[in-house]
Image (tube, rainbow, N blue to C red; front, side, top):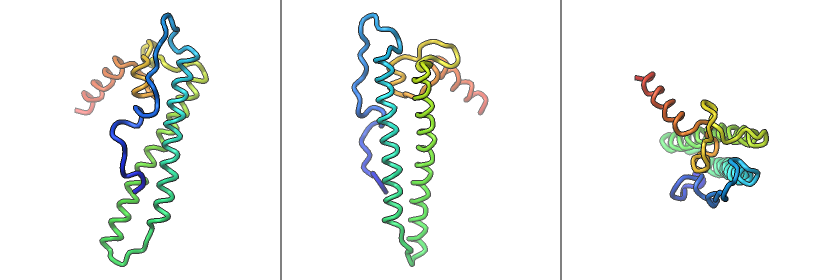
Length: 147
């Protein structure tokens, strides 16, 4: 499988220095938005590179094993890879829509209540559209509905 040795930690915590707000800096200033554009573009590039690695791996490793068990193992492995890539494809779309929100100067505010989502939450999940309070409420409601 491509990139079997995943580094410890979330892919979002790699490759950027946490943003340091300056005194009296306006929320979602030009500099702050640029910070998130960099994070999102790097994340997207990483996902696209993973897609390329998967395609190359599947081309290189595809074999017609005579043993049905070996064939089944390989097909299951490929199936798992393709499902992972499909989730990542959806994430790339979400990253693109988040980049558009930044371009439209609508990034960083909660869709539900309109308050600032917060720099640290956005660094942890750059595609977040809800503040932590609204997200927590949504998860509680989801649990109640599912029970």
